[in-house]
Image (cartoon, rainbow, N blue to C red; front, side, top):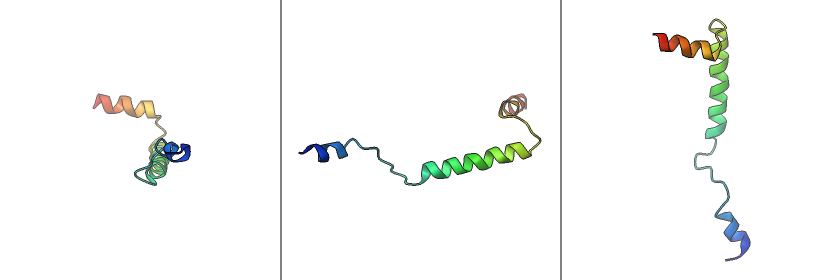
Length: 52
């Protein structure tokens, strides 16, 4: 097996094409929702959820 063929075995593989981009987009949307829900920081939300 030549080097080029062997190298293909170790190339990154994205089994779910587009998943990372979709997750990043959802993360941005969630962050915007958090900002519009009263200006709580992420840490404040975590603390409030633990108190419930």
